[in-house]
Amino acid sequence: MFFIIFGFRDSKLKNKALKGNTICTKCSSVSSFDVKGTAGYFYLFWIPIIPLGKTIEFKCRKCGQHHFKETAPKDILSKYKEEPLRRPWWHFLFLAFLAYQIVMLAFTFIYFEIDSMIQESKRNAETEKLDNQKQLHLNQLNTDFTKCVSIPSLEKDSISHLLYTKVDFSACNMNRDDIKFYSVAKNNMILTLFQIEDFYAKEEADHYLFLKDVRDNINKSYKKGYNVFIGINSDMRLSVSSTNSNMAEYDFMNNTSYYDYPLKHYYENDSVSTYNLITRLEHDKFLYRHENITTKKVELDTTKLIDVWEKINAKFKFKYKTKITSLPQKIFLKSSESILPEDLRFFFKYQNLNGPFIQLGKLEVRLEEMSNRFYRIPVVSLKNPKYNDKSKRVLPVKVSPRWLLFYEDYTYRYAMDMLPDENGHVGQIIQLGQDGKPSQFVATDLVSFLEMYLKEKIPTDIQDWN
Ligand SMILES: [Zn+2]
Image (cartoon, rainbow, N blue to C red; front, side, top):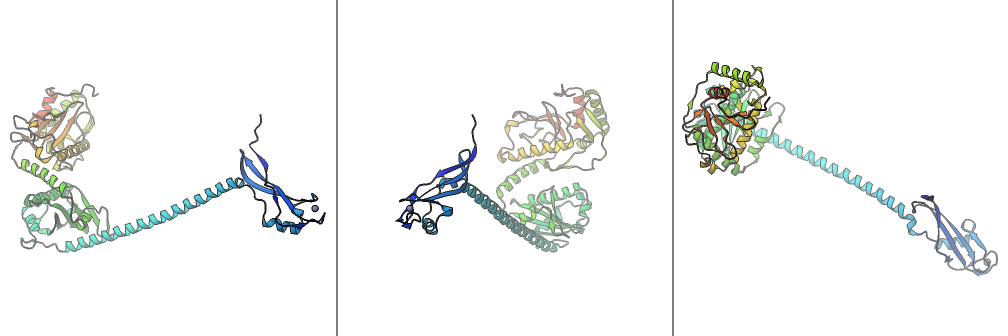
């Protein structure tokens, strides 16, 4: 069986009488002609695709004389043209569909063109607006910086005066009398500006200490929860910070800002959400309160530390490279907002390849996690009897941003505790509580911990480590 899927076909058109009377050239009678005809089309799968020519014939009703349209007398033709035979509508179905598709395509194209033009002009306007804002803020900051005076007075600028008297500049390797001050408060925000020579030549740890000291002093002295923005102008570099560890820099020369976050917040926002601010402040107050309790700090015995560490490596065969020398004098940990203690700093000089003692980078990640968990706990339940330690060595809290995790095997996690309870030591080693259980005191310092570890007096889970 053979299917013809395309070809030509004729449709018979509906017969008609020619309108009015015409004189027949054969019988000379005044009579009417009948009109009949066919219309051809090309089809594909039984669907008419392209309409083709029509064949039209005229036939005299009296004598049967007939003419094809091409050779018909003029009067017959003119009569016919008044009411010609129409081709059935479905011959045009495919063409109509095609036309529809083309029109839709054109509209879609035009629509997207116009839309992208609109979007582009919107983006340009937005960029221009942002640029203008940045420029405005930068000018504003510049104006504010010109108000810096060398010795702030209590009457004129009490905030700067407070900082002038309270901040421990020498601890940050700075000379107080070389610094110029200006501070201004706006709703729940304080912008405090400093002009400091060679600020960027100082170590990152000095920057951090300075920012923290400024912010701590403001937070301690003003009961209201201020959001503190600190601006530094030094060596033609302008930077503003809204956290202790991150400075957003404004390029003075090129008028471009790399991060517009802190300035934007200070100059544009009159109402920063106070909720987060107050929660954060309450948590920080909790930390300050406990950090101010004097607890004993154990002295570091480096010889002992090296000795026991090498014995551990020999015995357990953890894969460590030899010492790295590039570890800077001070390392501050962003999330815990504390400087890495000397004994742990020593410890991280051994670059870890494979073993339960974690790397510095991993410590920072874990601290970030602990910090986040700490700030999510409601302030009222920061100290929870559920985590009570009878010996009062470990603070009864679920998690603390001052627990510096340094060991993590399959089951157990150990941290250096920088915020102990009243009977504890700063730098004591604790085992972190799991499944809602309290954390436990393990050793007074890192050396004692490692000695116990060497003698396997500490629960571990390193069976399949190698
Ligand atoms: Zn005739």
